[in-house]
Image 1: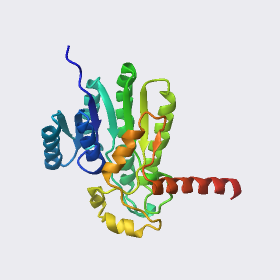
Image 2: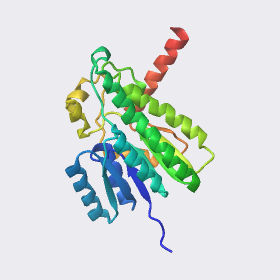
Image 3: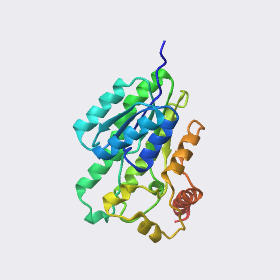
Image 4: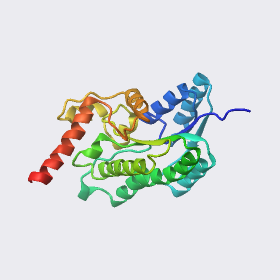
Length: 257
């Protein structure tokens, strides 16, 4: 009897963290379902993975903010009963003051970072719980812990993923399914170009000394932490310090403010 191959689905796998997840899991003999919006780039990437690792890579050209595209992906997840890993990675940031931001941006941010993840997890979790096996990684950000002007759309959307992941983890704690919310700091990726940012310029403006993290480092930390009863994964000491400082500052304000 032929054994079913391991399958992982990664949204936003064209570049950066998503692409690094795809490369790492392909090297571990996972067949992949990857989504993205840039046809040529993600198709070429899929061919490279297939050739290099001898795995099956299925590409879905998906814009998660479009209902018909999201519905297509949901159908795919529902049909993939042996999906072992789901990685909700697709996303992008904005940089605008609250009163100047277009209202539709907030709707798009919620749909892309939160609503799509909710829908995908609900379907995937049912199959994973039936199989009593599976892993889900929601890619958030260390910015979710921080108060950052001009990030009123992005940071709250990422903060929601943290709370949601912690609640789901508690609900499924008696199963063999695990969930992680990954909170990287500034990571080298071409996603910054989408909002007209040069990542080196952004890093130079940070007050706290910060080394830009390679996406491969983030992925290694994430995968090595899976299944260790750690829901929140924050790669890098500086990022851990930033998150802890932000939490303690809020606690101090509540207690003594």
